[in-house]
Image 1 (tube, rainbow, N blue to C red):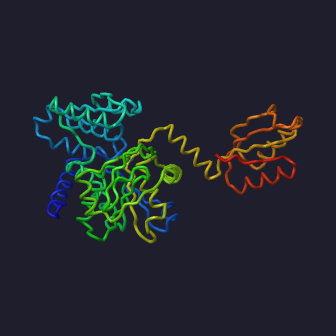
Image 2 (image 1 turned 45 degrees about the vertical axis):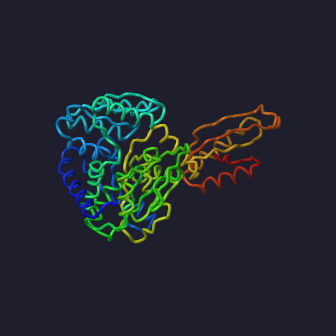
Image 3 (image 1 turned 180 degrees about the horizontal axis):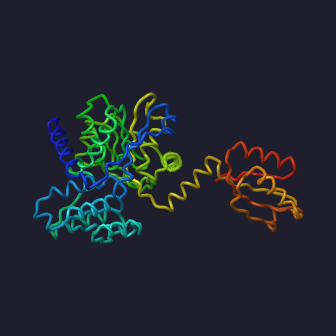
Length: 408
C-alpha cells in the first residue's frame, strides 16, 4: 500500500509535469453548465478534456513520461499498444518530444483512428484481432528492439501527468465539493485524486464511475471479468485494474459507481444538445453518473471530467436518432386510411397544419393483412412536443383513420 510519503512524491511529479506540459497542451475549460445544474439542483462544472489536443487527456501522461526518459532510451524509441486515445496521445507526445514511436493497433481498429495516429508521426503496426494480442506484441518488440513501453495507465509518470488536470481544476474552482471521474485502468482518477487530496484533504468527495459492462474496479473488492462484453464506453473497457492504480484508488477514492449504456447514451446526447460539446462514451460517463441520481450532489459544487471526445460518427448518429426516438421527438407512425384519392393528402395536411416536419413516408397496399379498401402508410416525423403528437393522433382517429405509434 502506498504511504503518504510516496503519494507526496507523486504529487511533486504532478507539479513537475504541469511545468513540462506548459505550452505543449491546452489548459482545457472548466465550464459551468446552467442546464445540468438546474437538472440536478447543484452547480455542475464540466472539465472539457474532449477539447484537449488529440481529443482526450491521454497526451498529458504520455508526454511527461516520454519527456523524462534518459537520452539513450529516447534514441531507441518508444512503443505502445492501443486502439484509441492512448495511441493518438503517445504518437503526438512522442512527436512533440522528438522521439520515434511505434504503435501496435489491433487489425479491427477504426480506420479514422489509424489514420489519426499515423498523422501524428507514429509507425503504426496492425497486429492481432484483440487488444491483448496487440499488447503482447508491443511487449515482445520492446524487448527485442530496446523500445521503452509506454503503459496506458499503470505507470507513476503517466499517473502524474494525468494529475495535472486536478491542478487545473483548482485554479478555476478552488473549492469543489465533489469530483466525478471515469475509471478504466485507473490512471486518470489516481492522478487527479492525489492532486486534489493534497490540496483539499477530506473536504472533497472523489467518486469514480465505470460502465456496468466492465466493473473491474470496485472499492475494496477488485474483480476481473473475463467474459466477452461490449459497451459504447470502449475507452474504459478495461478488464484488469493496474497494480499502482488499484492501491491509489483504494486509499484515496471515496466511492465507485456504475452506469449502463442507456445512461451513457443519454449523457452523450445531452452534452451535444445542451452543452454543445461532443463526448465519447468514456468521456460522458461522469455526467451520466451525476444524472443517474446515485450521487448526492444537491446544493454542492460538482465537477464532471469529460475525458475525451473521439467518438465514431456512425455511433454518434445512431445515439442522436435513438435518443430523439426515446424522447418522442422523432416518431414513426403506422397509419391505416381509406384507399381513395385525397386520403393521404388529408393526413399530411393535418401534420403540416400543426407545423410538424415529415421526414419520410412509406406506402403499402398489397400486404394480405390490409383490406382491399385500405392503404397503409408509415410516417416518420419530427415532433417538437409529445403533447402535440397526442393531439394529432386524436384528430386523425376522430376521422376514422387508424394511427399506431411504432416503438423502436
